[in-house]
Length: 524
Image 1 (cartoon, helix red, strand yellow):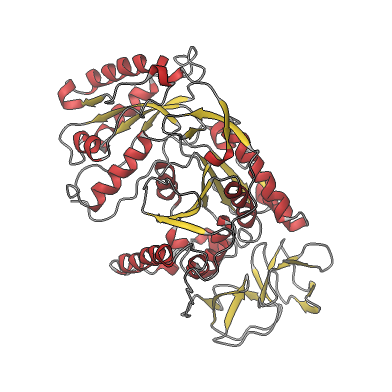
Image 2: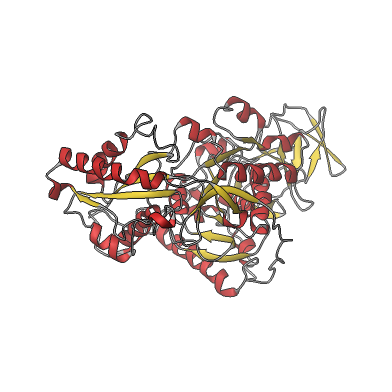
């Protein structure tokens, strides 16, 4: 990556010698001259931060390159200095050489001396928070679940300093689905993942009683027990978690009071934990991007990739997701797969998405949002090439279904999720991620309890405008700070947050309404 200089430093970023465009590092006025790779180009029009500028002549139908990769085709001839965006660039069709498992990188140099202060759970897992969850099996019991959780406010938790809070895990599904069908299995996996999550110290299941997604099937199919003794071993919980049916209890009020009574009995045991030093190999890092802009793939995503590599070097796990936002860049992941079989698992999910979206007359290239395009992203290929930078440079060791437990495989893994942030992060957290890092260029505000979310800004103007929501400013890269330096800062923040430091989203109280399981298929 090199910086193009004009009348001031850091006007634009030129990422690769093969690129036909550079990216504006600030709002650039018409008439500005840029020095790029030994050539001077003059801007005939203003170009906004994050948007693309042609650095050489691009013919109609020619491929346009960014990151050294194809991001689309020009719909008209584009002269040097011209703005490149939706008016003259489309995704187009191009052949990808998957070359599965042909460029598997060697393991990174091991880091063996890093730790964080977390909660040791039975089974070897590590928690970074200690919540109690009231898990609703169906939307019909969501309100009651919320009322139960709300009874345990700060005053009620005063004598339980090791409990971070009581949360209601509620959602919009649970009925009107095929029994044991795909949507039922995905919901079961997601709810069970929250119940078993290492950041959940204890839980209560609440249902209506007549729903398709019954508590009994959830318990038996997912082998649910009370977090397998998530407290200290000498105070192990009963094998079966408490389950309430509103119809059996006698309605709303009686269910709420019984739920409050059961959680009151649970609280002393959940509180009976303490933070202790745990190897950084127990970090299971979830990565996500939302409200991306044209500089997300230049600053915050590659910096997060550096942090991901550090986690892997420590023996930990980093998970990439958002399948619709790796489409167009999947060939770079298949090459890094540890085997052809792992690469084929990813390609199978891509093929499924092409089939699934076609059922509704939708194309994956519709993924870049209005906000993405306002920020300079044009095609899904461009967005995806920037998005996969979050995964760093290590080998892809496995591919997981939505909300599937991410274990025991370590290293860089992929989970199949939609690109929409709430269901994507829900799947990662249900899969076991105990820290989340969320990058944004436009300014997404997000959190999902029980997993702390660190937010990284791609550019300084947004970071300064939304400083109450952003944890780290990767926009400093556009002013000359190295990607490695920001990546190291993110890694250190991950360990600090895993040890209990509160993120901006936690301080705001985000995370009670962002649990959104992926609903696949018709509502009956």
